[in-house]
Picture 1 (spheres, rainbow, N blue to C red):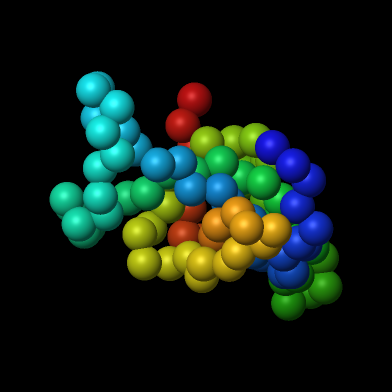
Picture 2: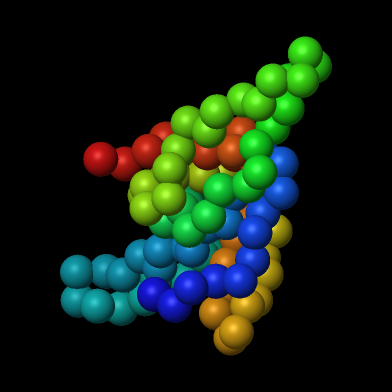
Amino acid sequence: MAKVNLKPLGGNLLVKAIVEKSVSGIVLPDTIDKEKPQKGEVIALGTGKVAKDGKKIAFNVKVGDIVLFKKYSPDEVEVNGEDYLIMDEDAILAILS
């Protein structure tokens, strides 16, 4: 994957969505299950949230993690013809291992 010149700020993450395919290789449209969490790879971490006492709050995810996130949380962006998602870390439901 090419380097992305986009740095999220605060507690935001840059995620590349993973498109689900059926066993036969057919791309499944988003309309199959509107409430299903989405899957993606963390590409970049923001600068970090800051607590009220001024201390930075560590991220629970790292670059390269495959995560499940809330479907309607992210904002879609396009960089160099590639689609990415920017979301708050709070939108992450789980890390897949």
